[in-house]
Length: 240
Image (tube, rainbow, N blue to C red):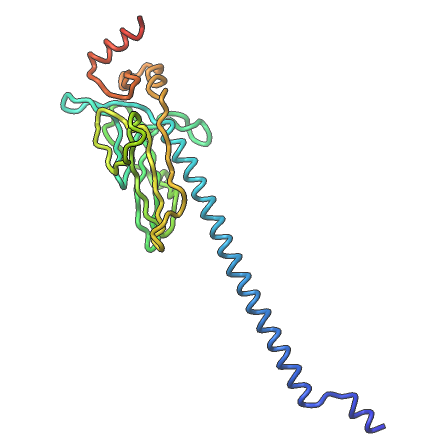
């Protein structure tokens, strides 16, 4: 009977072996859970970035497609109310009635460094007649569209030269570009963080602007700004 009782228990060696096996299993499970957590976090970050980029592209395309061909006069010279450099983009556009108040808004895209993150900031202000430049925006009207370890670059192409190279600065004050491109470059590897944004200007924006009866609009439909007298003559010819 004593022999049977000894055989039914665990020896110290068996207990140590069991603990060793249990420790190994727990280590494997811990490593697996840690790997799954890292993959989950990476996938969540990737999905969040895709959503951020998609939302930014929709807003950018909407702004550019609604661009108004407004003109201003300075020192008896007329120019389009448009500023386009590699790091900044400003123009007047029409926002939809929802979720904002409908009407023309001055839009300004700029780049702001925030620690290790670089933000592409979209600012806006209501457009008032005879504005010469973007007037600035309140904090509530400054929204980072893109955030991360990125570099942002604007460039511009002519409408009548679709195969021409993109230029980082738009210098033609009497003409607007046909398309605007925004590149998002990942600073970690130097490659594109997403496909470049490319938005074309609406070809009928000038005509719809004239329909509103504004004297600040350019009436020439081929995209080039002319003098006031030539504009009136062009309108008279078009009406015949």
